[in-house]
Amino acid sequence: MKKIAQKITAILTVAGLVSFAPTESQAADLALEGGGSYVLGDTYRYYGKGKKQSGRYRNLGSDYYQSARISMGRVTNYSGYRSGAMSFELWATNYYDATSGIVVMTTGLNRLKANRFYKGVSRAGFGLYLDDYYYPQLNLFEYVGSWAWRDVLVFNYDDWF
Image (cartoon, rainbow, N blue to C red; front, side, top):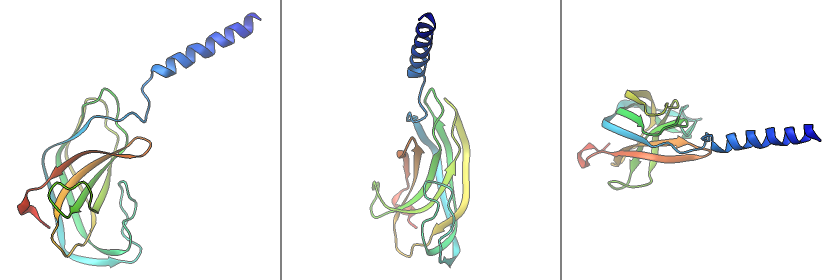
């Protein structure tokens, strides 16, 4: 009987410690800071199976793609715990400060430790070729069991594609 009581006490102690530990799916307080930029190449090429991406979407589908580079001054984690995996994305939106649009390029960022930042984030890859004018913006998503939006940098009206 004594052994059963010891086992129950041990299980309850472990359960109590686990309940106070931060979970991996806890959302971090992430921010895009400083200046951001994007550069799209002049030439484009059709990829029938799409072009591999490393962010939230692994493939944006078959379409015309062009070389692309997106940059951000800093990505900061203001939380007291490590972030989830992040997706840094270039979007084309129909109007200024829109909340949805066409994902032009997506690239992954590693998890970020508590109260730390990545400085001078710059990623090269391939983005969808768009032949119309759109409002560009950089978005940051975090994976916490599912992808959740964290921050946006909206470019001025003069910075159209």
